[in-house]
Length: 473
Image (cartoon, rainbow, N blue to C red; front, side, top):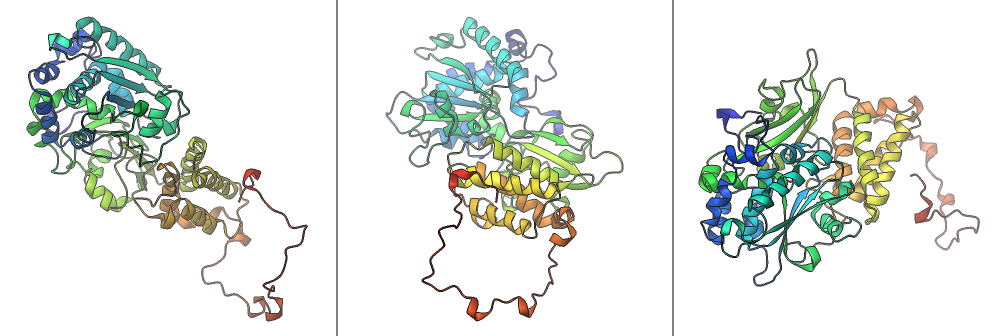
């Protein structure tokens, strides 16, 4: 997990056996950033974060300092919500940050609360992450006992903060910030419409709320201890500092790696022996997902792209949640595509019709193809269903849904069909494949006298499929 030059910001204690404890954290410089922040005004702390140009590490990549400025003036109370509901397939960096360095996250929360003038923080952790919950709970108890959390933090005047640990029930959709807020309020986790429900304006309990990712907040102690300019000096102009990526799939050494943001390439992180170590002997790269299951797939020609937000966005995908999933030449892309689509179909909250119906339809079509029961028009039908969820199949998606889950299910379909259509056709029965140069016989054209009159009435025996029938396409 060592980056170029040995600079490690958020994973520096991963090799410290007691780095998760108060003793180990303080021995390695813990809470120095908070102490420096408390010697500054809240506005100066905010300015340091702006100077660092810290992009959010949760998926959208929005600048944290700018996001903090969206809270309307004079509206109180306000809340900080930590999004620890990491659930994107292939993503596990935040889980390790919570397990191995929970005090770093707590210190980041305290710095953010001080800068924003907040007294209440909610730390929302995914339900299945039991070890992370235990580590955070133990660290919170230590922090309260040491006076870092609670009333009159470190004797700094009237600065008091409570941090509430809350864990969910394991819903992928709760990774979306408004759905997370719904869950925190005790409701079913379903996304809210934006506008008007931008969390910075109308968030938790109807009050201004800042939602930040675990890795984003974990950078704050280093930024306050070393300075925003020092952070901005690392990485690329548009993607500063370091970033943590989880690399999995067909690589020699899968794992979590902290690398210079914006200058490291996909080739570096996949093939460099310091990182994932390349593919297994005798294998070649077939495709890779650059930013979690939601992202369109990349191929060999994309290997030399830097891990930089703007560059990857322009190339037609995203860095997203920081998960790189590598697939070698042994991969059955039809099954891989089905696996991703099935996940999104199962995790759809059902609030939006295109997502609720469309993801399930795509899963059923792919299942039919894999079972050898494919129809001649199934591939075009997959494209058509995807087009109804995300018109045109563009990236970023043109949404017909409140949140990006529905369009995310279209990404693997569009990527795989665009590159490996022959592999889909190989699953179809021989008589189901329509050659591209097929010619329609002249006698197959409907005769003129077969045209249905405009005033024709459907017979009473016609079948109507209702929306609730659950019929497969």
